[in-house]
Length: 126
Image 1 (cartoon, one colour):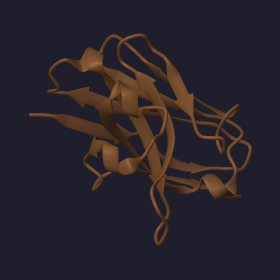
Image 2 (image 1 turned 180 degrees about the vertical axis):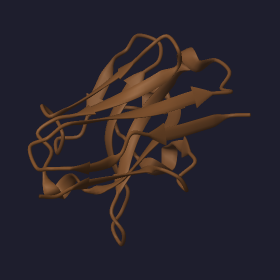
Image 3 (image 1 turned 135 degrees about the vertical axis):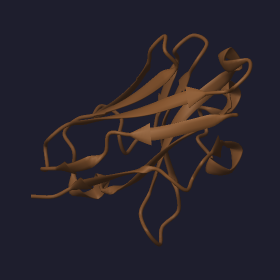
Image 4 (image 1 turned 30 degrees about the vertical axis):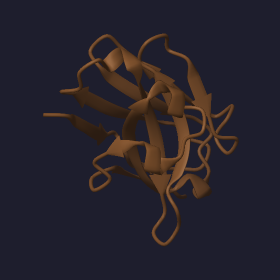
């Protein structure tokens, strides 16, 4: 069964750091896929913020997080989102999702498959 499970959220002060994890399982031909991170604030549209190719590790970032967030993967099919210099406006529920790698750069939520019902809450507040 295909599954993406997010973890690692929490409360952090502005300027702090947090690492989110996305455990990926059950997907065939994973090497043709990208794993993306999205975030959503209640009442707003889902925002794509990063994507990594599971084949060659190429990464893509939204301008809103470029230079502060990085995404990485390991051999155990876990994808990470390393968040640094966090700001209050980063507060959101964060989700991971997957699509064929060619959809990574555009980061359009409708192109991606994800649970969308779970996610992990990140709150940046003093």
